[in-house]
Amino acid sequence: MGFEKREVLLIVGVIFLMVGMIPFVAPVYAMLVAAAVYLGMRLFVKKRKQQIQKDIGEGVCAVCGSKISQKQCPLCDKPEPEKGA
Image 1 (cartoon, rainbow, N blue to C red):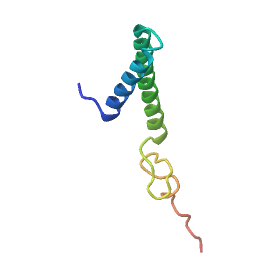
Image 2: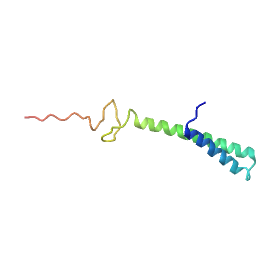
Image 3: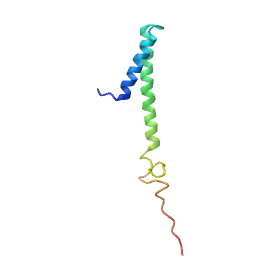
Image 4: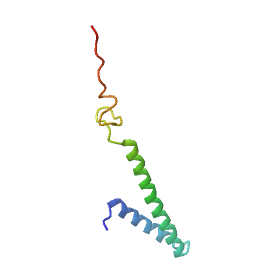
């Protein structure tokens, strides 16, 4: 089971939250709240990643910063209008 650095930090933070709540509530409730916070954060991050992936799509143009669609930048890769004589 490989954890990323931010997952380890989240687990450590949730454990500190649980330990900090033990003097004020029963340990069972502290564990339930900590588990809810952990699952809530994981769900939030997952949804946010999906939203960012949907917004970015194929990527971002390095020149103007607009979203790339159909492997072309809509602003930079416009065909230049031909000048008539």
